[in-house]
Length: 108
Image (cartoon, rainbow, N blue to C red; front, side, top):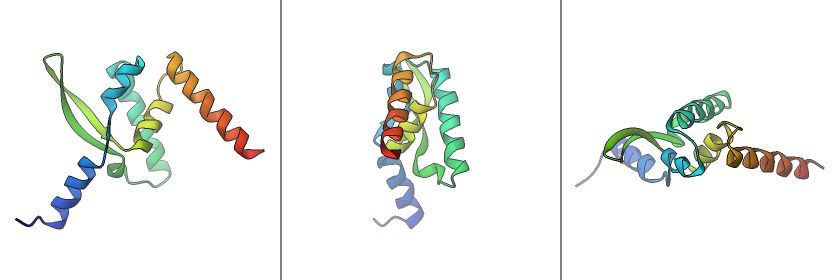
């Protein structure tokens, strides 16, 4: 059975995303915080002309007996989302500081 190119691309975009936004629940983020961070990460991609669907694919996830909107993410999508999360979370703050330190070390 042959797929149309658009069907193949949709399938590839879905399965090439190895991460889920809900994985960030394990870092202490709430679903609301993740939603805000995803929007900020998508805004950053838009500002730089990156294709959103290459990094963020909306899906639904079953969790604790409910169904929730989630995203499958590329590695860039995951890291941008985490970088744009609330710095009051110690894991997010540590990541933000490490990113800036790494950037500064490469600029010297």
